[in-house]
Length: 202
Image (cartoon, rainbow, N blue to C red):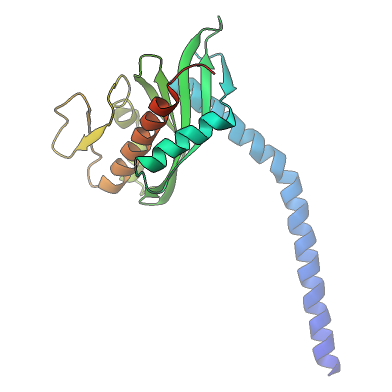
């Protein structure tokens, strides 16, 4: 009985100390992680709108309207996480930056920012999180793939395995159809969200 009590006490103390240490580490690393995430997001914003100077987050009603449009369009597993308005140094409204999370990637969640200007043209695409297969799906991060979306103006972007022929098509990543599909789906969700809120300054 004494041995059981001794072992139980030892286990309790180990668990307690581990919990305290984990809490301490979390407290120390929380702010640096948050700051890095913010830097990554701002860099992504700058990538999709090169003239960007300031942003303004859309109100909750606008975000809800954007998400409802994505649900109605049957984008399963896709969530609109953020909608912000973009402005240049002179305060001129440039368009919207929409952050999308698509859980249909081959390696899990894909988070991306999509810029769409006042003319409903895609200005750029940048990833915040992507964990696809190295040498295959991770090629989505390459400029040669991302830049295909830039300048596109369409209700829906499709992908082709045999070479894009139409203005609303992009070339799929070879042997990475699931990744290509997920990225296109995320972009199309952003387009639907943009159209639902009118793409106008709030």
